[in-house]
Image (cartoon, rainbow, N blue to C red):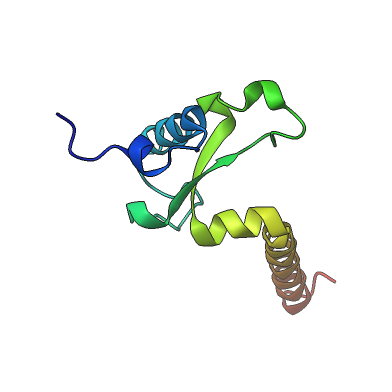
Length: 107
């Protein structure tokens, strides 16, 4: 007998989506997949659709269309903040590179 069954707690939930979420998390070894994050706390991990359901509904339950993210990084994916942070990081790297060239007398 199973002591805990999520289906009993959420009778109206999309159980196939819950199974998809679990498969995505298991495939990621229950770890946020953002480099250098590594959060492994199960209660703050989410499965995120790489191709949104609105664009690709046929892949809604495809585990290869998922990535395991902590709640913070999942929220960033949905707000677009992640794109801004990547651009800021690239800009910072380029500024440092230009500064080093200037100090070397190359500019």
